Length: 213
Length: 175
Image 1 (cartoon, each protein chain N blue to C red):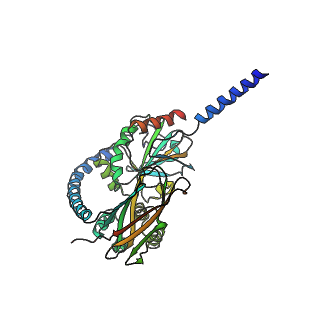
Image 2 (tube, chains in turn orange, yellow):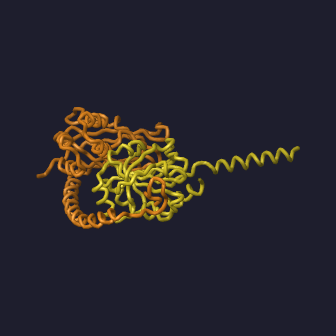
Image 3 (tube, each protein chain N blue to C red):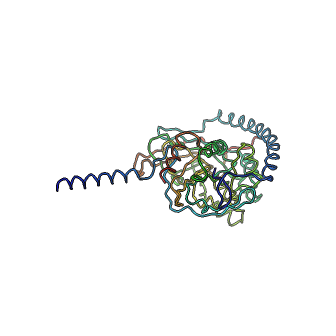
């Protein structure tokens, strides 16, 4: 790579001794981490398989496929804690309901995603999803470090996105935690000028995942 | 007189054809035009504490890649970026990796784990990444030798594959 060789220099990267020493130490500690991660992945895979077998959380039309993966509080806390999120942030997020969403545009047209066109409900009452700006403002007002805010932001499903043909993107949505099924109805515009057929999807068995222990 | 008119017509046609071909190069699947104007400038440090300024790479195409250790596709994509980077001369093509909002140890462990020689700049608070408004992580932004953002690649891909290296080579040849 014309890699990182200084602000003006050009040429191959020359690793410093410090870099090489850290590299060796890192490799040793990584072996341990990989083993621990492998065990964790097995547990998670088993849990997810069990949950997936219980209820297929995906919806598909000719044009679009959406997968939903409800996350337990422990899963989310492990993720954010490992990234150094402050305790006050974790305490708030622990109470919320996280669902990881993956959207795949299977069509040959652009599909326009806009979370404003998603309606969640529970027990026949609307379930309000907070906009990402709500969270960002909250973190800023709490003076949460910018790095944590940035990582948090990147883990959210974008509010709007034009999905190109075959594009697949995802992220988390955050809902108030409720017991029992959550219904979703969402619409997507399609076509270059958003004047193509409206795509509608519904799902009536989303849920908030609970910790099993 | 008529010959002069034909000659003029032929010259105009030739000019039109030449200019049509001089337009932006069509990218392969997964890479889209992303013409947001001049790339926002930045100065970041790498894991050795050395400082890098984007402006220093003016005059070459820049492959600016944003990543994070928690993003699955980043892990798969990184070795392919290294293989791709070996196909190009440093003088014509700069590969810059920018980690988004993670600490030095996390970055180091990740790079060691995937056994790459690539080094990464550290966007410690994530604010440089924000300036480029990528659609998600990983994202690669291609900046032309004049410093203008031209393309964005979304999600992970196998950068060493011919469809991508041919495209990047075409960009370099076209400059």
